[in-house]
Length: 265
Image (cartoon, rainbow, N blue to C red):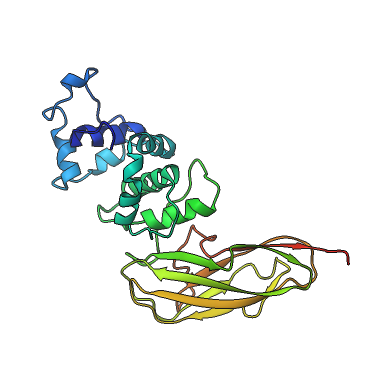
């Protein structure tokens, strides 16, 4: 972090950037010593917890934009890729300092808004979500249904967005990594808005093979444009054996867009 030599000052600035007035810093930097921020330094080191009283000091809505701007201004650009790798974001995914800063801020928000001090690592999932969704002032953190669960779509083959002619048929493949610590068993990928879009898939439910943490899978379906011109978004979600969405608040994680155009012969 640029200009962040004192761990306690860093934690204090995180609180301030997110809108909390629980901590303050002396006006002059030469007065910002470890003695002024000892508790915050222990939070950084993991020797103290963020108390419920501290959590209540944050505003509603949470100051996500202020915190993400703080991270964006202070994370060294040269360190982005290394930091992303530490959060299990695949090296094949493009790095974006702004989106990564938002993802880290969302992680801090999840901690502050949780009743527990043990929250899931959602940075990789949030980063992936921000890559595909417009940034909202107050997005909902992508907390998985199962603690420690995470999925990362490494590739959409041959593309994520298609432009097709009426009546075209084409194959689409997802390359998905189990990026968490949960074994995937009895899961499926389900086309949840198939009734409201014209293009059809050969199947609305694709069985996901049992997948261990760290392993990649490929699953494929075929689409039929069905002669209906327009812009469509095919939304797919991963469900468990009970029909629960494994990754709620992120319904575009596996989404595919299809532009169907009528072509005059």
